[in-house]
Image 1 (cartoon, rainbow, N blue to C red):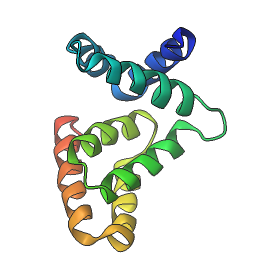
Image 2 (cartoon, helix red, strand yellow):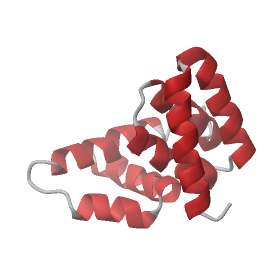
Image 3 (cartoon, rainbow, N blue to C red):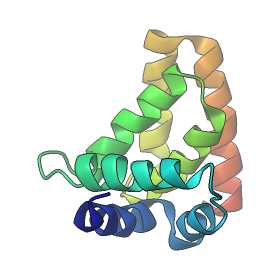
Image 4 (cartoon, rainbow, N blue to C red):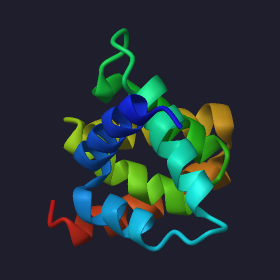
Length: 125
């Protein structure tokens, strides 16, 4: 493991997803899942999210689109929170999900709209 990239990724991951969520994910990792947490933190968050070309707002737009297309509701919920932390508004998220309805399918977008409403209610926005 590259400790420098891991620490960089841990910082970014906490800032985007929230320290409580990230710390729980790492704390609850066991012998089986720890390598995945390390990989995600180092590679996804340190190596890719840490690249300077795209800002975090843009990366959130891309993630919400892809996760909706893949119909991954748990990750959509997590990344809606991250998108809000990265400066996207409720209206921005609505437009992203409308766009995905056309290109990824209405059922996938409906699920993501439902999840977005849950997050907005939980975050009181």
